[in-house]
Length: 248
Image 1 (cartoon, rainbow, N blue to C red):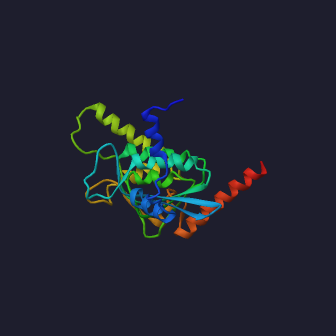
Image 2: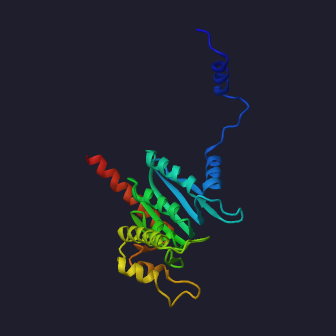
Image 3: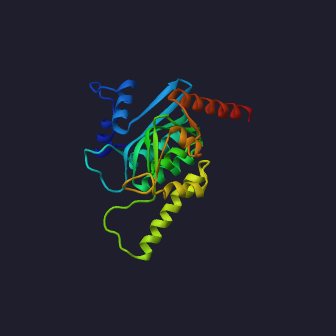
C-alpha cells in the first residue's frame, strides 16, 4: 500500500537524527532544576523526587518577571507524573514561600494529601500564609529551627464589593483553609483561629508568626529537624510500604 506524503513526512521526522545531541542524565537534571526547581535523587532502587515551593505561588494571573514564583500549572502535572512513576518511591517537599494564590495553593496541597506514595515536607526559611496548608499536607512534616510560619486571615487585593455576599465568600474561603490545616495536622480549629486573629503581634496586620519549635508545640508541624532527618523519614516510610507489599 502506497503511503501518502503526510505519512512519509511523519515517519522521516521520527527517525533518529545522527547529528542531534541526546541530553545526558545530568543535563536532564539541570534542565529540571532550571524549569521547575525539582530533582530526582537517591539510589537505583529507591528514587526520591524533591520538589520545591519557593517565592510566591502563582495563580491564574502572571506575576511580574522580577518575582520568584512557583507556577501551579507546572506543579500539578508533575504531581500526577510522580504518582504514576513506579521508579519514584517518595516525595520530599521543600518550602520557602511567602504564600500567594489561595486556590492554586490549596489545589497543590489537596493533590499531595491524596498521593499514595510516602510524602514528607520541610519548611526552610518560611512557610507563610497559604504555605501553611502546603506544609501540613504530607504524611510527615519537618521545620528548620530558624524557619517561620505566618498564620493570618484571608487577604484579597483589588476592588471588593462591600456586600454581604463578598464577606460570606471570604468567610467560606477562610473556613476551607482552616478545615484543611486541622484535618492534616494536630492543631485544633479553635487554636488555629486564635492564631489567625491575634492583634498583638503584627504591627500592620492580624495574625501570628510561629518559629520552628513553636510550630511543633502548636501541633502544626510534626518535628523540628534537618534535611538528613527528613530524608531518613521518607526512606523509612518507603521501605515499610515496600515490605507491606511484599507480604501481600
